[in-house]
Length: 197
Image (cartoon, rainbow, N blue to C red; front, side, top):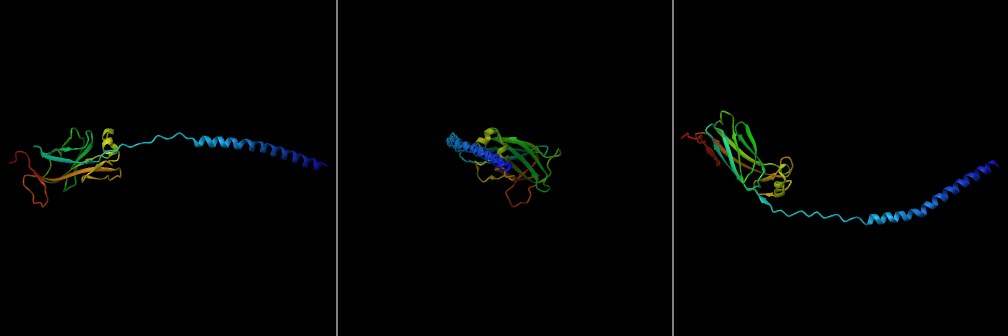
């Protein structure tokens, strides 16, 4: 008899569980349908339209001059936007020693220097380079014209950045310092100390 009561109790519990589960099944499809309806009606996302920017063919030129103290000045011109950050580097070919200065383009021009030690530059070959800094470090107004990664820059001076940060432009020119012209096969400017003739 006890076994029968246990079986009856188990049967009642099972019926109660099934009845409870059955009621939830009927209401659940309505909730799923309303949820599905909400998901089907998302707000349209605004389209981002990027403005078309014409490529900028980079032009840079630089002139070097030797001061009375045998230190070098670099002045140049460029068609890059005002406030463009550039680095001017003067390197001695024999030793690889270099001097650097950061500057900005203002009204299409830039100037840097004096370059060299206090005793002046020794005679020999030198290279002057003008490097346009990566687009990501340029002021916003410059980025608007050249692109955040310099993607709007074109021309023979433009190349991929060494660090993979987009395109940059580099101008390079070789010159000799000294009072006697050196024998050379390439085009090179010879700078003499002012007043040495």
